[in-house]
Length: 234
Ligand SMILES: NC(=O)c1ccc[n+]([C@@H]2O[C@H](COP(=O)([O-])OP(=O)(O)OC[C@H]3O[C@@H](n4cnc5c(N)ncnc54)[C@H](OP(=O)(O)O)[C@@H]3O)[C@@H](O)[C@H]2O)c1
Image (cartoon, rainbow, N blue to C red):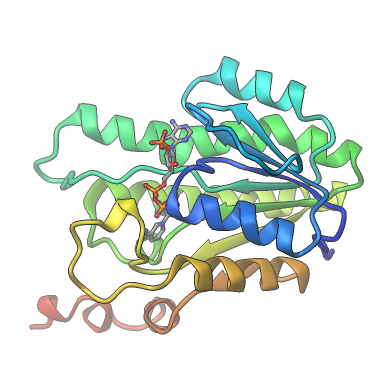
């Protein structure tokens, strides 16, 4: 299963964000015929190939309406996400649930609504935006939500194989967007992460790791836990 972006019809959730904007512009640069730039409050665009569309991933009626309006989609980029400080041990349940509503239930709702659309259009592709934090629990509820979403992606990949849908999971660390405006650690360029993701999509990959830190973290998942969490070493 490979999904060239030439003449593709792409839908991006969270298109107004740092990575979302890159997914829109780079998809067009690679030959997409149309991009639905979805957001809770979509902006207007000068380029007629970009179609603004309302889509709040936490509102099932909004997700259903977007899927009904965008019946020609061949590539879905499940990118919308939120982050907020929420330790598992002490975080409040309202924040914990809000993070899961967007990063897990919202992303799954988008996959469920668009899977039949992709099937009708020949299979296409679903690109799910996870994080290195799916694999290392340093960000409390956010890590947990991205781990759950990663697991859902693994199930979706198996379940949608019969309809010919390529399901690609994207993992990466700190990247320079509004989400990390208060982070002082080194950050990836969103253009680089999206470029790698779309290279992987067009090459038929099932997973893309966007940076060396993510490669390192994934490589340690089968090691003793202290390799991943050195502070826990005896
Ligand atoms: N930046 C990083 O370091 C990093 C690292 C790993 C993974 N990620 C993941 O990358 C994805 C994109 O994040 P980003 O870095 O580009 O952050 P961003 O600039 O803050 O963009 C996030 C986007 O998600 C949208 N969004 C939030 N809740 C939504 C909802 N209920 N329905 C629809 N859209 C919603 C936001 O829209 P509004 O404008 O309406 O708020 C915003 O456009 C996220 O899934 C994030 O978890 C980011």
